[in-house]
Length: 100
Picture 1 (spheres, rainbow, N blue to C red):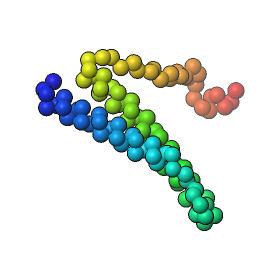
Picture 2: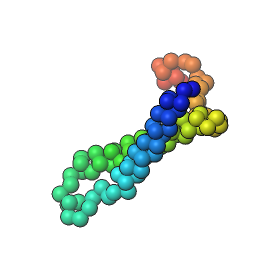
Picture 3: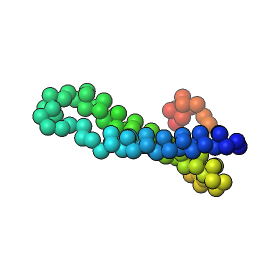
Picture 4: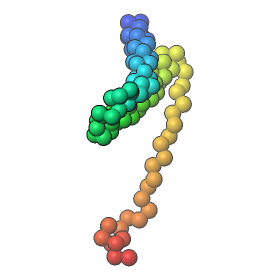
C-alpha cells in the first residue's frame, strides 16, 4: 500500500472518530426540552426518536469499520462477530403449513 493511500486511510479513520463524537452528542441531547415538550406532537417525537436510533446505528457501524481499517493499517486482525442465521427447517409452502 502506498504511503499516500495509507495516510488518507488514517485521515479517514480520524474523521470517522470525530463524526462518531458528533453522533454521540446527538444521542445525548434530549428529545424534549423545556416547554417545547407540550407543543411537540407525537409524530415529531417519533421522528426524533427514529433519528436518534439511526444516529446510534450509524455510530456503531462507523466504529466497527474504522476499527477494521485501523487494524488493516496496523497489520492486526479484526475479530469479527458472526451473525447467527437461522436456516429454515420446514421447506413446505405457507399454504401447506397452514393446512396442518
